[in-house]
Image (cartoon, rainbow, N blue to C red):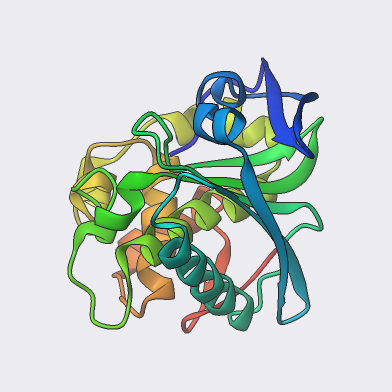
Length: 230
């Protein structure tokens, strides 16, 4: 999931205080981090394949341990595939039901990777995407995070203006999306790209029509299961 408008003020809660950081999308940082802001969080820094990232876990999130393992696995898969993450990569874990699984790819026009991981990640998100399918070797939360990383890499690949404004990315394609997942079938091109990215990262293969659609809409370049930014 990612918001449509890049024009709202972004807030991020860090170092014990709320700070206005960007013009970007997201009243989320005002309204959806209540579990972190209200109860505090535990912050840790990690590195995989040369990519550093921060995890900020709400002290009230009893699933934080499982979510952290899923984050590490998703980062390992994506970086093994050749993708690089921005210097500012953060995962925010919350337990409040209003805490969504979301990706925020820009801060003041610069590429970042901020991903919130809510309680629905443990059970597969919306229930209609690949993350809900039983996939041996892959936890639901790992697939949710791969989907959100797909949004981030897609946004960085096409740039902030095209990602939020291009009408081709706001429009879906049921025939193409239905070959990927129920969620992709009923959503816009950004969601089709993210679901296709997720599916490829866990070993699924798609036909030429799906991959051509993915490429024409700026999906992160994938070659034989491995990827690299254009």
